[in-house]
Amino acid sequence: MNTTIRALLTALLAISLAACNDNGEADEATAPVVRAPLTAPTTEDDAAWGEYLTDVVRRNLGGVSNSPYLYYLPAESTENFGGEYQRLLEKSELDIKRGILAGNMLAFGSPSSSKMADLIIASFEGVDPGSMEGVRVLFIGDAADNLRVQEALKPSGVTYQFVEAR
Image (cartoon, rainbow, N blue to C red):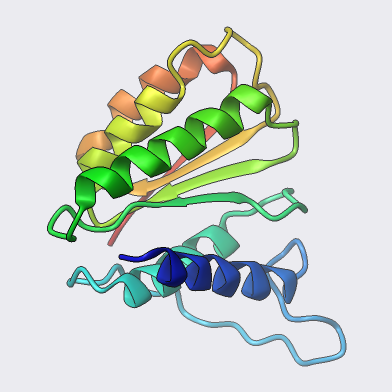
């Protein structure tokens, strides 16, 4: 997946989130449209995953009013997956080291749930205990990866939320 496609997916999410209020409903000027939740793609198509993850993040914003930090890792079969993984790990580590203010959300999702779980855990290594209270972390992945991510994040003080990709 090239950088242009990733930028487009991020822009799509930012635009769709900006069009919604805190409840994920349409602006008052238009009639609210209630849509059924999307299901997780059964393929490794990045565009389909981008649409699905956007929907899940939008439905789980809760009280978060800022645009969330979004981390998407393509499927392991993607050309240069190792490079994609390393760049995303560096980005998430840098964001976390700079500091995330309370009231913000970090959202992680991928067709490669176990690799994303590894990335989340590695990103939070060395975070001071309790230093991220008030920050929400949303992990969209396989149930098999939930507990290990939850345990790794617990010391940081984040509010952790898991959504099974299905």
